Length: 310
Image (cartoon, rainbow, N blue to C red):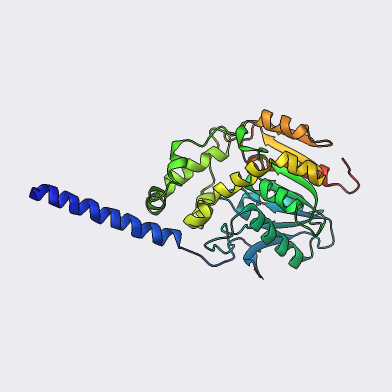
């Protein structure tokens, strides 16, 4: 073997070792809970530490807000002031996101729902109108299956009932969760690339708020790589069937310019669930709670009015 080939072989071997070590380090990373939003506080629960934001009159009917994948309480900040004038509003950070604890496991939809239920029980919140965007809609559906009566009504924002409605996130998103390559990219992806990647969560041309990049960077690779757990939950039973089975009153809201899901097809699927109400928000993408907060809040409040039935 020539000297050049020996050197090349040594370099490749060293690179493989470094990538393997990086994978072990990145995938074993955990982070403690920390308050990241004004007014946020940490609940020390058996299932881990959770950041919550609890606003509005304490004895008013509650609205619970559950954020999307790679997101946090911060994605609700434009809507909360429109809701907490007449409602108690509790926004939570899911395990692995925002200011909540980021352990090495516990990211299934059932585990996330149990985590939220424990937080709501600690706060004395039952019979809530639960509003979940994207991943939050899936967790909200799982929460409706948890005993304890935490969900009186469910609002799903831009989460299709199953993955067949997906438009696909593209090659770069798939690469970011591949073994070895994903953890390596996690270490070197610059903020401008993160911001560009987040654009898919909005209508084309919408300016991604800079603080959402900061929220993305709070995650660990393990919490980022947990997206597959949502797919497994929907593959086991689609959300529309779960909601029909639990007889949970549903409002499904989609942005007309959603780049992740086929809005019209997803709404048509939900509309088949008896009593379900649907709404399409023009000019909004996957995140109408950010892009069109007044319109989204008005829909939620109307649906949540006492005495409103299916």
